Length: 428
Image (cartoon, rainbow, N blue to C red; front, side, top):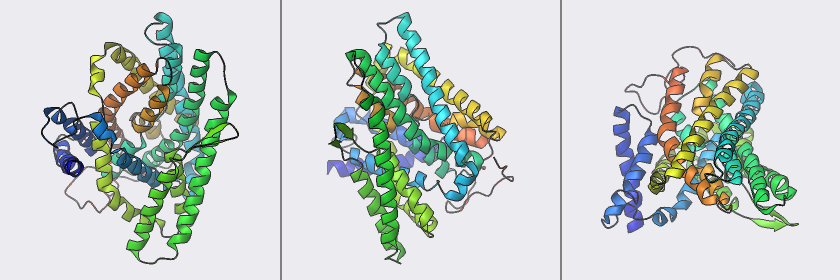
């Protein structure tokens, strides 16, 4: 009973709050996150009003499976952006921009936090500084995708953004694994090439292979069905399957092997959309089915934000440096890499702003980083930054896409129809 009431309040409350957000010209994502905060253990949940709200973070964590499934569908949807015709036009640009902006962000955050360590070693350890730099590279695909879908954004910037966000996960995984290995070596005095280089590469390779195979099998199975509802059911079943399989971990030859949920589901969507001639229509139906799931995902994300972090002055200080350096790194890294690949002026100017949101991937990395002696500080800093970025990031993404001319003025039009473009879009 308690879980059903909590889920109902999360879904209905989030949607009602989105109406208020629309009046304030804010994205629905922000409304869902605020709803989560209100239902969380630091507001309504603290009042102990039976099942009205989440009374503890453990209650929110118990519903983590919903968040994992939602991330799987988000990654599957983003994977459908990797169509061959699109990759021919901007694939090279997306790869270069995706890698360079992530590396630039890590370098800038590392520099700022290492300087803080040199000024006062008691504030933050060298290992924590290096690890936080790599976590800074991660961008939240969920918030970005939701803003794009809500406002039906379309154009060169939007297309490149979705590709870069997808690539960002793979790059961030490599950077984090290498940095965490270096941080562990700094504490233990020994460095392992297996943990720094081999294991992250194995994880990426296994994820791509599993996702590619799942996408091919999905296509083969879909061919046996012609009913739209049955094809939709098969698609949903396969995404649930890939989410489940991506949680597997095992040892092989002394190497810890695992999968990245985002990479597996992205690859499934990529392979499926490129070999299936009816994938576009099917994805439209999947999007409709997943709408309430995404609302729950963001409300639960808001509910699990730990507001106790606001009472920790040290975390707030390091968090402020982290946020400032990461924001600058994303903006300058995107500007520089876009200029290098000769992107259109609008893309060069606004892409960095759209890459600011940060959430689940970063929190997962911070959980791993807790193994460090200063791991709790890393987690606290990431929690604070996620709180800021999740509340501010979607609104900044919306403003950047409006300024680039890829979100048209809202009116009382059908939500099923795409907004007509205001002017012809320039090619990259």
